[in-house]
Amino acid sequence: MLLNEAIMGRHSIRSFRPDPVEKSLLLTLADAAQQAPSASNLQAWRFLFITDQQLKEKVDLFSPGLSGKPPVILVICSDMHKAARKAGKNSEVYGCLMDASMAAENLMLKAVELGLGTCAIKSYNDSAIRKILNIPERYRIEMLMSIGYPQGEPRCPKRPPLEEICFFDHITESEKENHE
Figure 1 (tube, rainbow, N blue to C red):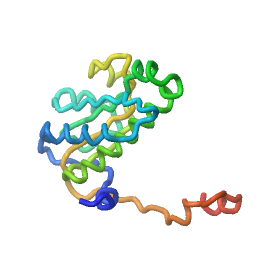
Figure 2 (tube, rainbow, N blue to C red):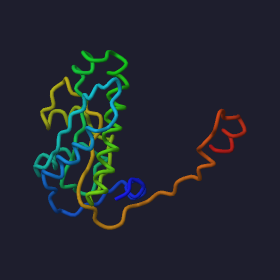
Figure 3 (cartoon, one colour):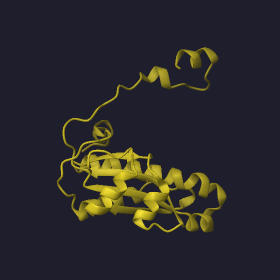
């Protein structure tokens, strides 16, 4: 699969077949994720794959953005102790989130190649998820992601024309107003 095919084929999947996802595929996704760029070479990301049905049901109760009964819920975390030791406050505040986001995109594109669907989720109760999954305080939860085999056709929102979102060298007030 060409990269452009993966980019154009990636959509947020909110309905999944009940088929389990093999552990080897999840490790392939994690490997793709860890190949992402890393601010200050932090690499403080941690990937927690939830496949246990009871744990998934508990997480689902506290994650309004989660839908479609995914076979896997991924929790992407950052090791904040590692970030503090390695790169300081700016990396703790911004670098870890940036790293997690880039890793998530790599993972989502690899998932398309493997015939899997994903949906990144930021609407969840952090303290409840942390307690359910027994996540230590040193790890900051950056996002959840549903993973599985898509069922049905995804919603594909229309994208604005490039002329509305791309500028070169400056943005004038009239351009700002025309594009809002």
